[in-house]
Length: 191
Image 1 (cartoon, helix red, strand yellow):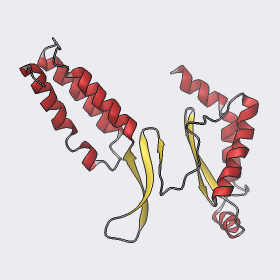
Image 2: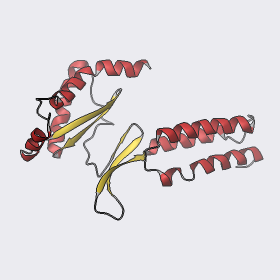
Image 3: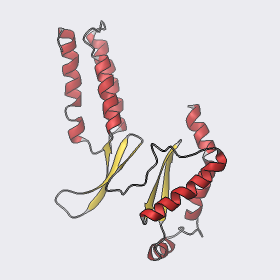
Image 4: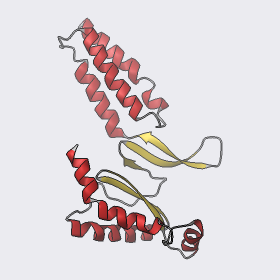
C-alpha cells in the first residue's frame, strides 16, 4: 500500500511533464495541433501510468520514440530514478508489450482488413495461476476438499475478474476444469 503511494508522489513531476502538452494551449492540446505535428514528422504521445509502472504510446517514428525516452529519462534523473533496463524497450504495437499482466498487441481482426489493439493475458500471470492451483491441489494435502475448492474458487474468481476484458477464450477455456480435475485426482491419491 505504501509503495504505490510513494510512487505516485515521486512521479508527480513526470505527470506534469507528460500531461503539460495535452492541456489547452499545449502543443498537443487539440486535434488540429496534433495533425500539424504529424504532418511535420513530429511524434504525438500519451503516457499511461499505474503506480510505478508506465507506458508511453507514441504516434510517430522509432527515432521519435527513442528521443522521447531520453527526454523522460532526463525528467526522472533529478528525482533519483532511472529506467529498468530489463523492462524498458521501444517496440511497434504489432510486436506487442506486457503491461500490468496484459499483453497488448496490434492485430488484424479475423475476416476483415481492420486492425485493433487487443489485450491478451501475458505469460507470467498464467504461470502464476498454474503455480497457485498446483500448490492448492498437492496430492499430499491434508485439507478437506471443501476448503480446497473454496480456495480454488476464490483464486479463479479473482483472476478471471482481473482479466475479464482480455481476449482469452483459448487460455481460460480449460483452466477451471483442469483445476477441478487436479483437485479430484489429488484426493483420490493419484496425480
